[in-house]
Image (cartoon, rainbow, N blue to C red; front, side):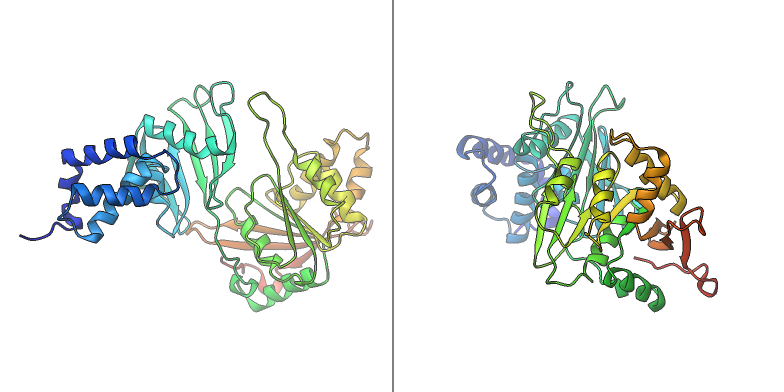
Length: 381
């Protein structure tokens, strides 16, 4: 008699013994993730004694994802080329792979989405229900998960999982040598840099790569809504915001963390994304000695990036006229680096601009790269 292999798993999946494995697991296991995989392997081996090890592993993986994990999403995330997993209600799971969006063969049911949300946010103490229909969190592997529930979305719960690379890319891998020289020089000269671009353009990836250039003897404090920037610095402090609990208490905003970071003796600050009143605290920090800091913002160009930073400063609640806010921003920020995602999924730098508060430059922007001889070049990530 031949031993069933992986190709015969479709038949096994309909076998009533698979239901027996599920029932035994629910009855015998304590419900905690620890030890779940070993328990499932033992149960599958009991019920399917003729299956080879590869087939057993495949069944265990699927049962583990379904019973204690993230369901089909967990299976999709096993592909190392997948960077984003998107669920638009019951139906196919979409992914971004190598910069391109595509539908997968995996489908998800309504109850599976509900289980996914409970297992992702339950351990974080974050309430996700009709009273709290929007939530963000982090999975154990560091991936960011965001969810929006009905009635805010019309076709069922929407879930987005963003995975971040484990190792930052070296700056030399991003493109032409002359551009790498410019970026390396900005970091080494302790320029305050803001990376701008649209969602998914590669802002966080570039910040992680720029941070690789920082002197390892420096103390770096990172402040983020959700830990995204991939860093391997030896003297690193990471701070992360916290949402309110079910009673609406305990929230810690980005602005509070920026203020707290200044008391932690940083040599440099890295603020994951500036999008509100915390901009004023960051600008003051950059103006008072924390040179060489990095941040990101959503913007379409260098002028738009400066304007958005000025607007964020005005949102701080401090009674500042626009001229004062503009002056503060232009004195604090030394360089703006623009990134974008191309049609083929690659990310590239499209602009490096220096910021000036001199009246000789009324827009505040001094072109830096690409120079006329390098116009049209970018660097793919």
